Length: 429
Image (tube, rainbow, N blue to C red; front, side):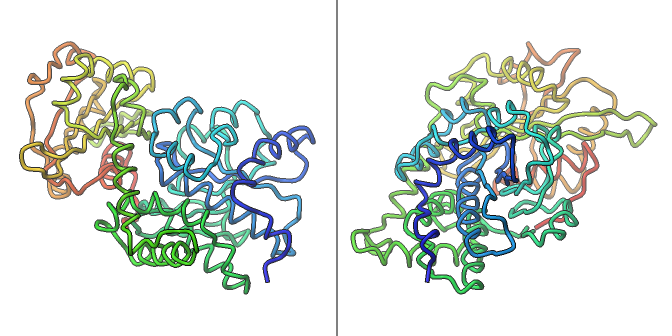
């Protein structure tokens, strides 16, 4: 049987209570403790829905564990400024379909502004497994990770100390790992499967469809299990159209894909920050004793450079300006688009680098290394065809490539770049 307390914990109620509970916690001078469930700083559909999904089901689980104090709080966090949600139409659509108010959600800029004492907060990371630059000043105590990126080997002890989940494995969507983790958890507690209701699976379905191209690409056993759970719950509903019979999943996928790829009206700077991640580290020369603290930033844009520069003649100036704003030593743009003539999926890779002996050395090694050539199959493109003269000067250099291996997304390119720029080795999934 589901407890009376748990049966009242509906998703909409939980989300609408985020700010009231957060404000009450502040008013109590942070009495008790709170867990923040944060996705990564690109804050895509998978990260944001996974953070809500984990936080809500964790909130429900507190009813079962006698070892956890009843006052324990949990908040999902979108790891972007609130204003940036306007760039993510697929997320806004998903929230509206679930009747979840954007105003009820907690965003990174709002959380940081509160200056909450570090010892009052623990963190669960979903869709990433390392502390990204914007979080480092918070010195987070990480007590759980569910992720599908390469394992950086961090937080094993702090998670083991509290017997938290540290699940880092290959899947198309992180939401699949989150959903299957909590389904297994409730089974182990002998709790009713009705905990996983239609709102829960409707939260998990959109990122699963987007990240697996409607279950046609990068699908793992975990994704299949998640999809099976989602279908069984949706098809059990009296008033819900059956997923298999009416192709409603395909219709949803088409809608989300259109919204995600819609770049109309965005400025060059908005294009760059719509899907952006960055990493800091030490860049060390292999031929001298020189080393520098450097930052790598990567933007993914869902159009070709030809389209971008046709619609934004000042794009490369904006790229340089954004690099200055973010203080990056290597600013990267990855394009992802369908060739208008062949219909094939293609990618380009742009590297804007600060003129620096160490960065020059490491970027040259990245470009010419056999591993990079095998993994990405880069073919140089002439920067002059994109009118880059205004930024290709004494301060910066620019490299533009066609990436022949189009299947290699940022999930593959970022670890490669970090290996050369920062000497970071990860356990590849």
